[in-house]
Amino acid sequence: MTDTDYDGTIDWDDYWDDADDQERGEASPAAHHAGGVLADFVAETGADSVADVGCGAGAATFAVAEAHPEVSVVGYDAAPPVLAENRERAREAGVNNARFEEATLPAFDPDRQFDVVFSYFTLQYVRDVERALRNLYAAVEPGGALLFNYLNEAGREYCLESAEDPEANADRAFVFDPEQYTDRFEALLDGDSVLSEARIEATLGVEPRDAFEVVERPDVQWAWHHAPLVYVPKPDEEATA
Ligand SMILES: C[S@@+](CC[C@H](N)C(=O)[O-])C[C@H]1O[C@@H](n2cnc3c(N)ncnc32)[C@H](O)[C@@H]1O
Image 1 (cartoon, rainbow, N blue to C red):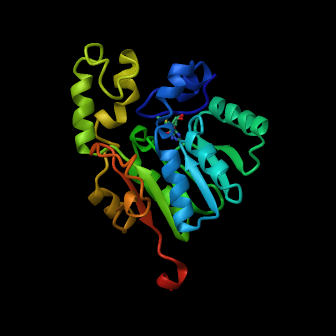
Image 2 (cartoon, rainbow, N blue to C red):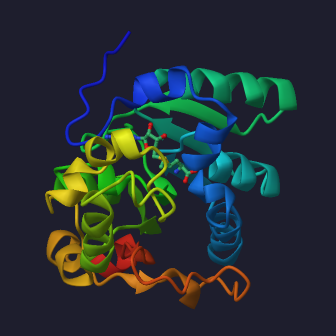
C-alpha cells in the first residue's frame, strides 16, 4: 500500500516495507559516521532538541537520543513502514526521548522548532530542493542550525557516469540496486536536487559552513567532495531584532 507521492525517486514505502538487512544497511548511510557527528554537534552547541528529517532506520536518531538522554529527538520520514519499526525499536530499547513522525519533503511543517534540524542523504531525492531547504530552515529555532549533506555537481557527474550502465557499474558507490538506480536518483540525475554553496546561500540567505568547523572528527571527516556535510546557522532573535 502506498500513500506517499514520491517525485523523482523510488517508492520508499515499498522499499522499507520489505527491506532485507542488506537493503536496510544500504539506506542507512548515517550509520557510518553521521550519527556520531550529529551527537557531537549537539554536544558542542548545547542543543536541547533535534529533528532528523529523512531518518530512515534511525541510525542518527538513535545515536543522538542515546548519547544525549536529556535532548528531545524527533525522527521524520516519508515512509510509514520504517517509522513503525523505529517506534517499536525505541519502545523495546527503552529510548524515551525519541519519537517518530511522518513528513514528506519538500513539505515540512512540524508546528514547532528545533535547535538542530538534521537531514542526511535525503535531499538528493527531493525535486523541489529549494522549498525543502526553506521549510527545514524555518523549523530551526533562532540561534540553532540546519545541519545537512547534499549532492553537488561533482556528485551528479559521478552518478551520471554510473547511470550510463548501472549493471556494469554495480561496484560503484550508490549503485545498490542497478535495476532501480536511475529511478532512485532521477531527481539528482535530472539536476533538480543538485545543490551548491551558492544555491544554498541564495535560498536561505545565509552562507553554509563546513560541519567539521564545529565537530572535530578527523577519524570520520569525509574527504569525498561529492556530498559535503554543512550547517547553516540561524541568527538568534537579538541579532535580528
Ligand atoms: C538514503 S536514506 C537515509 C536515511 C538516514 N538519513 C541515514 O542516513 O541513515 C533516505 C531516506 O529518505 C527518506 N525519504 C525519501 N524521500 C523523502 C521525502 N521526500 N521526504 C522525507 N523523507 C524521504 C527515505 O524513506 C529514506 O528513509
